[in-house]
Amino acid sequence: MQPPLATNAWLALVLIAACAIASRAHGAPVGDGLDLTIPLPPTPVRVEGHGQLDYEVLLANHSDKRITLEEFVVRDGRDGRLIAKLSGKTLDQHIARFGAVPAPASDPESSLPVAGTLIEPGQQVVLFIDVSLPGHQGIDTLRHRVGYRVAGANGTFRSSGAPLALPRTRPSLLAPPLRGGPWAAFHDADWPRGHRRVFYRVDGHARLPGRFAIDWVKLDEHGRFATGDADLAQAWYGHGADVLAVADARVAAVRDGMGEPSRISQRTHHAPEDDAGNYVALQLADGRYAFYEHLRKGSIRVAVGERVRTGQVIAALGFSGESTGPHLHFHVADASSPLGGEGLPFEIRRFERLGRYDDIARLGKPWRPADGDIVRHHEWPGSNTVVRFADDPAPDSGR
Image 1 (cartoon, one colour):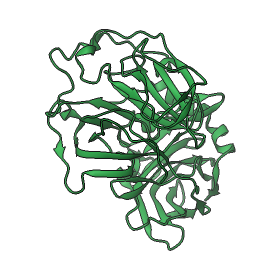
Image 2 (cartoon, rainbow, N blue to C red):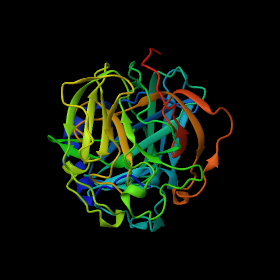
Image 3 (cartoon, rainbow, N blue to C red):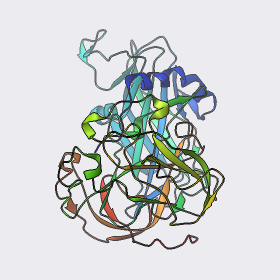
Image 4 (cartoon, rainbow, N blue to C red):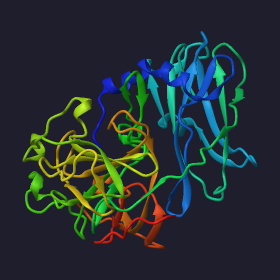
């Protein structure tokens, strides 16, 4: 199942907030009129035995010339080892453009095909970086270099941003939000309109709350997500499942009372502020907030200010808000508002990795079984993996 989708209007809001982002960002201007900004330095998260970085780079053309990006390179700041190099079609696929200026099929000044990503004067683009770090577990600094051409000038310009120090904080370490399984952990950095790429503008700033969000869908052993009529919300295996506190925490926010359609085909679209449906936000010991969204109406068992214990049942999985089917949306952020915080990484203390869906279109059919170690500790579940949790989560423990 794809995550809830953003509208074109939401993406347009990012342009409105672009200056606000840049004013509080980390980074440095590079080149003649091309500015490179990193709003939120990434915290490495562990995925399937290796580190991973997920963050955004803002590239703004402040010149009066058209700029064509040719490559973007990320290196380890200590030893210069290559971490990522994006160019050509791969570079273009990881960019979202703002300003609604389409790139032409060719450069009018040269009559040659455009070999890269074009940024018009005054336009800004967002480059999404999602890379693994095998052999770079001790990384603490990143260096970025962009290669580009300027209309009317010969050759390729190469400019480097200032070294970017990574935060010393660690991802939140959590217990599972659900029991048993199988559960499909749906998220994919390459979905053009998935959580990873959906900005929201709140209080004058564009934020990305779903940067590490996961949509949890319950399956049976054959990969089916419903029994009988799959158009009935209550026929989905996960509908009504217990939702659990992921840590000893304080309830920071609750919303209840939003109904849900009885059939998937009856779902309607909502205003962005209603996307989460019924939800609970827990304030964790590290000061971050864990969000549970699309909960069943009337199922929430906790109130704001209440203390909860790890593994405590706090609500039931439902189909409220902007949802394509019954599932639990879960993410961690730095603020108690569903849309008003920056999404932050988290790791789950223990789970069994059963396999993966290489193609989301195969949902409802068997997944590809896992190879290698099945039991995983202190990891963020990989893209579209299928996992199983212990029926009785153990109490919280240190790292």
